Image 1 (cartoon, rainbow, N blue to C red):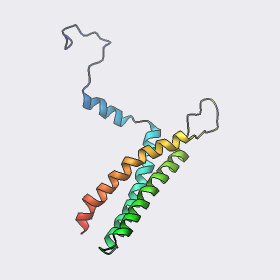
Image 2 (spheres, rainbow, N blue to C red; image 1 turned 90 degrees about the vertical axis):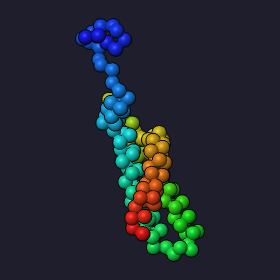
Image 3 (spheres, helix red, strand yellow; image 1 turned 180 degrees about the vertical axis):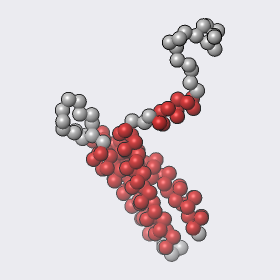
Image 4 (spheres, rainbow, N blue to C red; image 1 turned 90 degrees about the horizontal axis):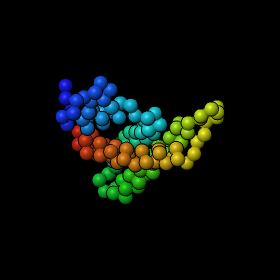
Length: 134
């Protein structure tokens, strides 16, 4: 059997994977710190997003300032809680020691994970769920 470029395939050469196969394998084998950061931010964003949606549905239509303030509060809570929770649950690798070390980099991982998650939950809540409820 010949390789795609015409050269014979050797027994030790792995087959060439498609872009989709590579991304699916990366998704299935994501690093645990990243999964924890995204999971903690997603949990906070879902709870805060549900509270924001409930407030938006119950607030009078003329209360634009309250909606804006609650939206800002939502974003700040998701970013702060995602950063803090990730700092708490994602320590640096221990190596040979037994003490877990936490640095500001753990908190930054949580912050960078929380930014798109906060946005996506807002889109889900207000563009998908709210029209179904109204």
